[in-house]
Length: 302
Length: 269
Image 1 (tube, rainbow over the protein chains, first blue to last red):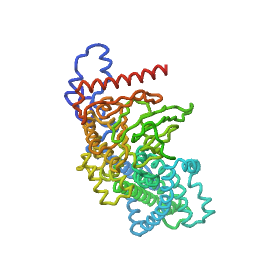
Image 2 (image 1 turned 90 degrees about the vertical axis):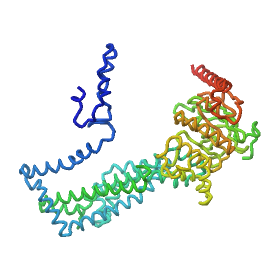
Image 3 (image 1 turned 120 degrees about the horizontal axis):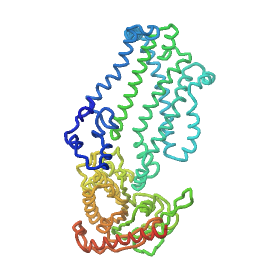
Image 4 (image 1 turned 60 degrees about the vertical axis):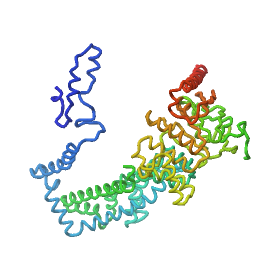
């Protein structure tokens, strides 16, 4: 009975558990309790809650998550179920990507976009990390800044584009400013929460070891916050990365976002797909680098 | 403020009429009511009480971390106005710096005091040895067992040579065996270093075993409901636990605690 109910992926049920299940029923009261018994420990099988899954389960799942969409895409284009103009074949996209790379356009576009994100997000970090740490550390500063930040945070950054063009023109500064206002408030709020999560007892212990307030900030709140700050950056650079494509709609001459709008003008959907894939890949690389940085700088928090 | 001489003239640390109200939406809530406790130089004194008697608040005020609503804490006859290395505090949850190794945790207070590297290293090594931590010097807190974490916290508090060591349920989260060995260790360290210790616990046996005097606190608001001298032979050892005189002292404290609880129930009802 047990083996029939076990899924293919489940760990083998131990014979002890099985034999205990077949103990004679003593009375009706016991029986009703018995029915609520699980047939195996909860930390096994496919839908285990918050338990590690073994590699022999994880690897095929990860592979499926990558391969399945690709397979569907290939099938859809190979069977001509969707017009190539709407959905170019993987081969066409690869060729478009190759051509873009060979002509050097892809690299200069990626470099332009990465530079914008680098400057924009660099400014975000420069402002939001100290501000967030201060807001999270001093409730009086939180009272001053939080209402304003909480309000502006909900204004969609792209809605500022017309204003930015009026204020700053069509140059780089309006694009960088868009990235900045689109990310700085979120990163401030998240950094403040990180600083506010430093346990009170840790701060009190530091006072009783002779530390004054500034030493507590420098030697306790900042180091304790570093992994959390890097996590916040990892989340928010994704927002900057998304926004840069929007920013490049403002009269850009190069950049991955510009390449997409240009390709659209000439109905080169294969190029759009190729650039989209590159955007996704660079995003994943950014994410991984922040993870790597976090684990290198703060191995204690892993 | 000048020196205030309390009734406990020769005590190292004492509280005089210490009262604490917490502000709540329904008005002030009294958590400590006119607490008078005193600890002599080199003495180890325990406060016992059930949860809700404001034990942790009392230690926080004694350490200068919180202001009292009224009353005063005196250290060597001088009012305590704020926290500092003069008064070490050890928490139940250890509160170690997770990014610092054991040795770096112990060195924290020495860095703050501006001790030079060599002197600091010597002092750290000394206290690691006292607490039996030498081989864990380079471990991170997350690699340690609960007992080892608490040893680190105590070593860290002792390394700055505080005038007084306050222990807030230091063994509350440890298993019985670890707790027993930590009790032996604290007795050992206390005898060796002669530190003045004020410890809060809810464990009656622990209080009787360790201290020369026990204060019994009653809850809501926290009051000193009894004070009991523990006349047991020194040096103390856990073998005392089997002695009838030890057990009768424990029963006495138990009864005092029970009376404190009943008094509270009666006043609440």
